Image (cartoon, rainbow, N blue to C red):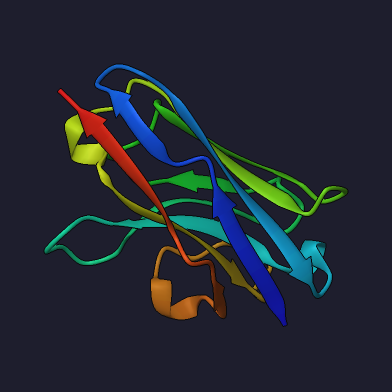
Length: 124
């Protein structure tokens, strides 16, 4: 089992930046591909970015490509999400997720473990 704890959310003005971090504990972190999802009020949870076990494979939703960067440190058991040029529509609860698959997946049903989420609010 893996326990995931997100941090780094908060309130930021449009155009600003935030860095989210997800700390993993329990099982071997490098045995999991990781992803960030988000869920805005009244909307379905959506894929934001994913990273393979080794960090070699990366992928992003079109809505965040070029603005967000996902990274992982297998020595520190963390996965981060750097978010730049934030927009009001980025406002959501952001979740970290872990999958036993080698490669990340864009479907939330493929993930085995989830964090509790961290709120990101972007003001105009």
